[in-house]
Length: 320
Ligand SMILES: [Mn+2]
Image (cartoon, rainbow, N blue to C red; front, side, top):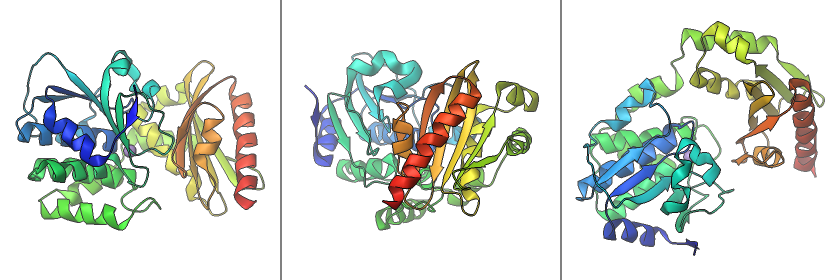
């Protein structure tokens, strides 16, 4: 049985059970990690056992999120997932997919897989929901918890710039600032810091930039060979996805990253009411209205051709 539950029921479930394993999605970002570590610290504060399984390596720039977590070992695990819209996104944690007792998420394209789910697509970040659960659990927002919630909220809103940002987003961020979160350092590290490898791969990717659909769609790509030559990590390449959408007149910005010989990971960022999730869902992916992703097999030329065709349809639909 799979059911949707209310926020209160989600909090009550956490209050009632124990021994939580908290799962993040693959290629973990600030929201899934901030939500997982924030929730872990809240649960430990109210006397529960909890630990985070974060899917891959914890990047150095996110290491502070684990500050204040106590190491706990336990059996009879209760599995929770945060910010994981689809079981396929569990990546290397896929073995847990049939055991997820509670999922907390904010993706509008959420595909239910947990026994019970609380999904609020009006929340800008899953971390907003984690904050609200903390209130229901009577948690004290320590600096270590505040750093986690703030990171989730700030990263999923592009530092409060995206249209998903609401009064609630700012109120929660304000509460976290009041609780002592290190917002200036977090903002600098998340938004204003890039590696030399990132600049090098950006330079290479910009050489591939091309316009389609009367200049409303911009596409750029990176190959494995380019990444190896620049020493670029997944994180360096991830940061490129916001670049094409910045260009005046571009409403669909597509970044293509070669993952295998004929396998490409796609990021779509849109402006002006073009639905990025609509474009990516054609290829079995998804995401948010202005930011979505998918994976496509084929040759690079064919992948670009299919994406441009999908972008042309979404651009037309946005005008209808
Ligand atoms: Mn999120």
